[in-house]
Length: 169
Image (tube, rainbow, N blue to C red; front, side):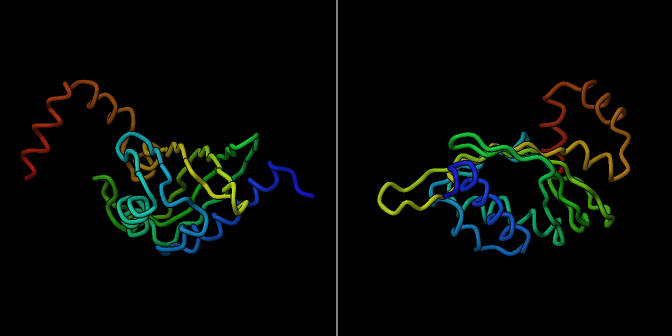
């Protein structure tokens, strides 16, 4: 008989198979309808599978259509599974205002998934995902000098970026 950790790990493995197909509509099999995906600054929180699929994943898949995610370390304890790894992909379309390079990149990430078990059916589904994505690493792989980028950002007050965005409209 499998342990809770093994069952939770298997759910994450199965979900990765679906994620790596790079199509929308497969996540309902693995995620609760009212799931919460808490992403990094610049992306934010997605509430529910619909918002996760169409507000986050849809533009992500356009930007990185051939991505393949792979955990290199994963641990499970109780209701939680944590993993860190990378996605190898082509940066095909702009993402988060970052100009696409058209080149292959490696995007590092860290995930913490919380699993809930339905009391009546015994079915396990992902309920929550805390996510860190190395967005600065993506920027660096697109040819930006991160030291200069961070110095520039640090030299400007927050209002500068609001005003700059208004000028784009």
